[in-house]
Image (tube, rainbow, N blue to C red):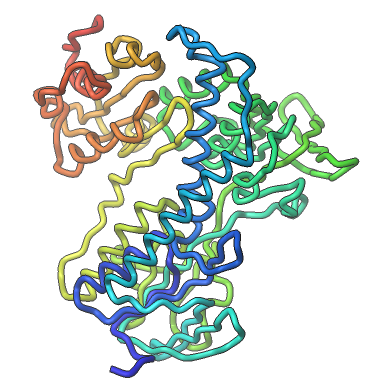
Length: 475
């Protein structure tokens, strides 16, 4: 096969793209992957937004800030005190960068191990399953393959009155690289990114004001979970304004003056940095040449079916640039599915059981239907919940905040949804996902022996509570 001909070409090396490329190579397909992402040093960096300026670096900063928060707020109950603790932001950010470099370098090694050919630059799909690669050095070359997989990812949504300069008005990448703790941080958007990055800088001492246009806090989560989380964030000092629409953001005298309106009228708040975190949009600009036959919807997403096929022979699309939640693990599984379909195997993604996680403190996680969705769809249901405050392990580690809630069908007992807020629920949610994936019932979870003392016992007790037989709380 010629050097410019492949079985598969993947456009994009984020979680969806690089996982897809690796799986294709594992299945014996000659694979190329094109990526245009550059790291802080201006050099190519595999892993996309997630590894470079998203999931991974934000978790590194969340962990660092949690350590500092515990030292200043919670360690005294353990008999641990420290005099005048300080945070070295440069060291903290440097640690984050080392984690990123290790993981992006790891993707590069996986490409070598699996004999994947990387091309660094932008990829443009042409008709006939050809791809034009525009290199960083200005060069152009055309590749061709039996199958092309678009995994171009997403970019932050920019507000017309609050353009990013990443000095005063910042996006998620800017919020990960501040060189000092801002005295006042404004956040537009109380979604996952806004809450996580707002939490980082609040723990380190910033006054954080979060402005959310929607009237409900975390409307995508179950109401009981969202209510508990909101109460804890308020205790931590996050000043959250709901039903508040921002109309203006002006840079004045080295600060940002933000104007917003809510039910009480118009207000102005002045902050040193303004993080705009109102969501992300599919990145498809300049991706499609003339005559490809690939369609894009009004939101800029590549149109695909349930198997991520575009309707054009040999052309697929996965990850953030298609319908569905913009989650790294969703994109990864779509990449595996498409690779296996191309290789003539079975491929499937269960879109009804994709876990969502917010890595705040406490953590928030859920999968499946909320109670409100069951009501709206007329599904008969029953619920069971159990608080971390009644769990021995949670109390032993001084993290007795939150609960686990399980929703099951009232007639079949099949688990419809699992919702959590509390310590380590980003890990605990996997138990609920496994149960739902195998069509399990609350009775199944209730009969499984959980080690004691563990946080997972809260899941066990919540399953028992569905049938009103929880052991460690009154039913």
